[in-house]
Every structure is written in C-alpha cells, then in structure tokens.
Picture 1 (cartoon, chains in turn red, cyan):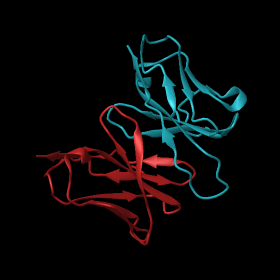
Picture 2 (cartoon, rainbow over the protein chains, first blue to last red):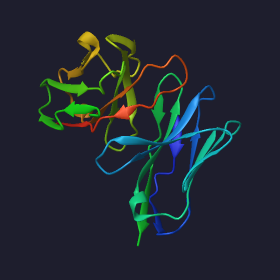
Picture 3 (cartoon, each protein chain N blue to C red):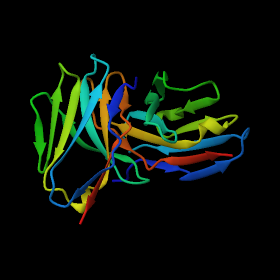
Length: 107
Length: 116
C-alpha cells in the first residue's frame, strides 16, 4: 500500500466548475500536510498547507481529517490556468508525496 | 532572488557510465534535499543535508548513489555505475533552517536522467 494515495485522474472539468480532490495517508504520526502543484515538466510548487481547522486561499480550500487520515482540496470557479497535477504531500521525518491528481480545465 | 538551480537539465548516458548531477540551493538555505521521480511513480525522498552534514539518507536506493555537499553550499549527486532503473527526474529542494515546524521547500527544475 502506498503511503499517500491519490486518484490519478484526469479530472476534466469546464471553466467555472468546482472540483474536489482527495488524498489518504497511512502514517498516523505524520505532522504536517500540504498540497503542491506541478505543471507539466516543471518542478512542484507549494500551493497551500493543510490544517485541521481547514484553510482557504482565494478559490482554494484545504481540509484535513486526522481521525480518517484524509486530506482534501476544493477548487472553486476553475480557471484554465488551474490545469496541472496536484500533489498531496505529507511530512513526517521527510516529505512523502502522493502520485498526483491531474486536472484539466477546458474552455 | 535566484531560485534553486540544477545542472544539467537533461542527461542521457549509457548503462555503466557515471553521471554527476549538481544542485545550487537558494543562497542562505541550510537545508538541501534530493528527490527522485521515476516513470509512473511518485516523487520519492533520497536524502537531506543540513549545511554540509547528511541529516537523513534513508531514501538513497543503494551504494551506487553518492551525495556530497562540501562547504555546505552546492551539492552533487553521483550515480556510478548507472543502471537502467536509475532513469527519472532528480529534483533538488532547499529550505531555511527551522527549529520546529515546517519551512517551505523550494524545488529546482530537476534533472531528467535517461540511462540507455
């Protein structure tokens, strides 16, 4: 079983749609949680940290459920520029990456 | 401010040859990390330097891989001899020192290694 599991997608959505990604992790001792964004053939870039209380950054909302070891990312009003791979990342002693969920936003 | 840089951007070598990848972290970042993504798999941690010291090298796949960070500035990752399964994208990341919590890791553009 992978340490961080994500649906690889792709998620094909029209502009303006709301889309949600989920992620589960196996190590209950994990300390910190993140969503990274990776464009094709580019490096990963931090999108946002994820807190148990939930956090929002513009159109993006992240949520952590420690009891279920589950992380989510919600994107509202999708833009063409949101097309990318979204990586769920968990930190224990090191960063552990999920395989990524690919999002394609169509006009 | 310059970001993390990596050299070369691409490398194509034959099985059995040696390749050395270089990473220049953001100036002043004490933490330097190496990661690898092989085809179809997730990004995996290789090792972590704090300044010139190896803090954690639990992700290094075998003794064909040697990482150094002499002087605590740039780092090199040498693969000798390279095998077919070493093909992938090697990312370097750096972050500032943190006594607790998490400091954002900034990733370099990666080196795409192909072993034929």
